[in-house]
Length: 212
Image 1: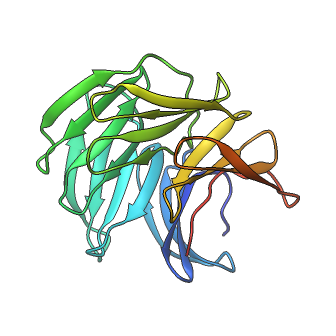
Image 2 (image 1 turned 30 degrees about the horizontal axis):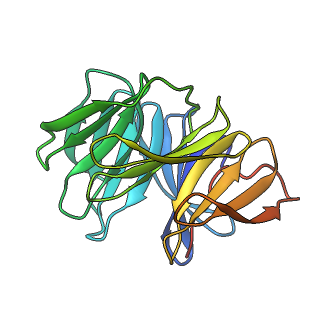
């Protein structure tokens, strides 16, 4: 059994990757040789991250879930509107964006703290935004070929052109690495959104970027 059509991937530890598969409704922990070590069944998983406490956070299209080290579910937060992408912080609070372009912040119990309409945008399964604990965030707009940064109030801080961006990951120094699903490139932006470097990818289409 192998990884088929990932909708998201993130480093779990130095030699493991958490892979979400939308089409097969599963989240897997996979080593760097492709061997699957654990599988959790989740309906339409969009993204999954290993938290500092060892738990696993999973965002599905219609809900948010937390699993313990034994892969048993310890928290489930149903959502009234479809989720595009989400992130849980160390204190248990959550930031998410819905498919109709609303940025939402939840407390550790899953209750809504705030919501801001940032405008509709076309989302792929596999969208990866960068969320900060202060409420600011950076999101790829695939349809408009732009990357946009917002403050905690939902005000646009900057935007920059990147062809068909699918994921944004912050790197040390405050810059960002952006993958181009169709451009077969990874673009490095500085903290203000200015492109400073581009790397061509020849092994296939770059969907996500993460650091060990």
